[in-house]
Length: 569
Image 1 (cartoon, one colour):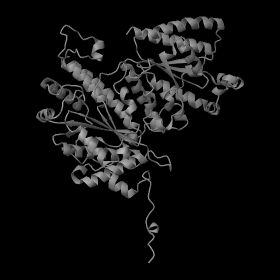
Image 2 (image 1 turned 180 degrees about the vertical axis):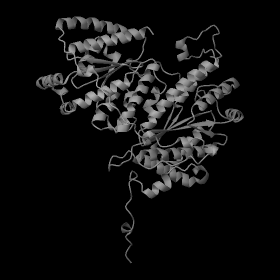
Image 3 (image 1 turned 90 degrees about the horizontal axis):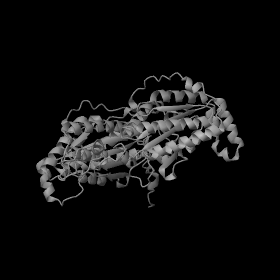
């Protein structure tokens, strides 16, 4: 009897990135707030892997899909010996471990002139990935607050805390009054919450898990385990005073942020299962936000054991857009000055201003400075930057020429590629000055005009950018922004000059000519941008002149003024 040909009776295998059928979506991917009571271990494992691969599939490029690539960042914090490690270990055993990223930090004092979140941006997951992050920015915050709230054994009783030492605590802390460290905690939590909301809006969803155990259980487990000199928050959990203060800090944190899932670590096995259920529901909700599926109604569930699950609803992409009102184009963008600065006068002024700028930059006490240059094509950004850095040592600064994002950059939150280019105290290089030739404002300029971002993305970007810049300035970074404007005829003359000059031809591209056809769109977008992002924290300097020499001097004058004012603060 001939062998049966099974190949004709079996459906061809599907790639893991293939779109899931509607039936699978309904059965496995819709969040079930009561799933922790109804799923056995094998069912939970299958649901976790299904959701994990479905998230990865949102990143696929071919064939094209309507899904929005989406990632999940799981923040793990809480008390020592509360089962955090066992929970993540179990999760990794129940999913495909190759697709689960795990990062861990312990608490350190915030770095100078950087927002709390900045040191952690390189660890952000790509869209489509799931990442578990022990410690994270909350470890740094708790470390800092604990130093503020708890006296050190080595405390110098005669030492008075200056404002600078308050921002950068040491081992010689004198405990601050409760109101002072709570004010600091509240301020930082507000900044972190807005940062996290912007992550969520940019398709990096968050799940925040806080593991807790009773004091008696903690002490029993500490006595059973070998002493660890580097606990998560670098505090001594054996000391009653420290533990009491930690619980006070934790209570303040959890009261101010209601999006934490609190996991009881009294039984480590149950805590691990509870954690895996929470991750499953977060992945399922992230999947919903990446597609056009309707959001589930979870308002009917009030069980205390799912106290934070109703926070895991699809992100703000489901919100309706309000009507966008373009602003009236200001005269400064329409009536461009056309002076003719004498060449010898220009060079005389240039040398003086460059020397003054270099002096101010070198006497800024290490403060981070970010220069942001935007403007019409051929408006003179490159020339202005060249004169700005001329008196500086190349090791003192970094110039970032921003073009279209690479694929791996598109697989992160929009601002990620700028976060990772900021001056960084962790970097080996000594430069603390970053100069951006084109910036994060591309979202509300070229991406808006060329429809590379949808209406919701570029319209919400104004507020996201304002928050980003406010975080930088609140941390002490000086943000100096320029919009360089020329008129349309002057642009044409500069294009033709580039075309006719061999060593300038590389500056002229087909995109430049194509963008010129949309001149009025770019002017309107610039006007909308200036109106919505000219803030007290990071004001714009508009340099509107057809004389490139005058433009360079104006840039230097403004930079000198900003640096001089900052040195007096």
